[in-house]
Image: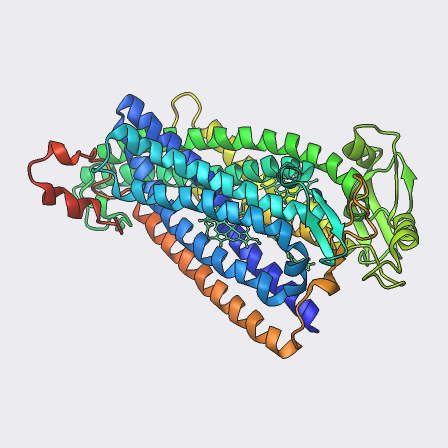
Length: 528
Ligand code: HDD
Ligand code: HEB
Ligand code: HEB
């Protein structure tokens, strides 16, 4: 492999890792804020326990999200220096804004939230977690604005003097129609991810508690509790069957149902926003649309195929085995009888317009990898079924005051946790690999001179030798792999520990207590 391919692999691997953590951060923040708000309003301490329990998982995730994000940023300068120079004007502003506004909000207020439990008045403490939510959501907006420029550059004009595009309209960059379409889709995808996570953990604990309560009751009846399996939760060691059932009913059931509803609402919003994005994508990157369907020849009434076989990474030898007639045309334009251009026609058109323009060789292939785009798109949608199982299963099993006592469902739900993560990864792989061969795709819509403002991936890469990129690729993959393992083990540990012994103690304000120190260590029991 040459330095270009290696650099692409490196970017791909590291950002997919980063985006395991990102959606959970973005989705958990508002869910925790809502839990805390319910506690604040009702005084129901079960919601305080849920807030603190998921708060712990959130903090671990956030810390690793920041760690993986920082390394991520180095790559622009390191492996993609030509590209970084090219987009310097445009990227500088949104990324600086993300740093200033978003990271400032996130980290400052997260710090206040962690240490403020018994230092800040309750209403203000509640406001800090909402500000964290606004911060992480805003940071997503700015980073997606930067990414959207690569899909659909706007707000720039060609500058001969600098030999690169110069920004002439910051507002246009920030309100790119691509950003406005992608941002809501990414955010609700993150909500679905966190909702599935919370619902699955809630369902699992509920089922475990009910099972344990039953066992314990039997054991108490026979008078022999010696072979009760040990609990993974230190706060359950002395729990009576009644305690266990109370947690199942009053803590886990409401938490699970809340999360199931968030998942359903997010799922509906995902379809609406995804549908809108498909139409924007069809106008802005017709080649990506054609590739997503492996639509090689231009077609009216184009179908959406459910299964295709063939070598798929080029146009020879593709068979659409099962197809929904007209569906692709419908997805692109909301009309069944629309003509969609196929890969071959687009290739001819792009060659005519772009081949031989600065930076573009005469024989450039303008189609992305058809196999990856085709299956990436379908994988994104299919993986969402895991969340559907958790959400509908969870609501069904808890209907009419019921509690989940099937340990099997608890386990199935846990196994579904990775599915929305995979859906997110597939969505990004589709978006980013479908953008190839461009790092900055030409914009055919606005008055932007598509023959000048574009950059091919081979022109964006740094001038390194392959062995050097091998070193960073292996180094980063190992580092990210290790961070991934740490993330998994920490999450697992705190998930199976359950809510801590002090999590139901309502925080006491400093000025309310006489003995300040008595309250300190308790609050700091977990890193805080
Ligand atoms: Fe990210 C952390 C950089 C993609 C959302 N990211 C984070 C940090 C850096 C980056 C330097 C640590 C400081 C901070 O929080 O700002 N991120 C990047 C780069 C990306 C990237 C260079 C491009 C490949 N990130 C990315 C996307 C999103 C986020 C596409 C949202 C949709 N990033 C976040 C976040 C994080 C974060 C929610 C994630 C986990 C976290 O904060 O705890 O703000
Ligand atoms: Fe990206 C690349 C994914 C975000 C920028 N990415 C890439 C790849 C992948 C990805 C897979 C590879 C592709 C090829 O080569 O074919 N992304 C991703 C994900 C995410 C992202 C998952 C989420 C986190 N990006 C992003 C953003 C940005 C970017 C936000 C901006 C800012 N990318 C990028 C670049 C690159 C990439 C620059 C390199 C070049 C190419 O194209 O490759
Ligand atoms: Fe998605 C992407 C659609 C689901 C996540 N998406 C994307 C796209 C489209 C879509 C069209 C592309 C765009 C461009 O490239 O431009 N989706 C869609 C649809 C659906 C979906 C239609 C069905 C409903 N998704 C989904 C899910 C998820 C997702 C379920 C998860 C959870 N996506 C995603 C992501 C992405 C996508 C992450 C990347 C980013 C953007 O947005 O761009």
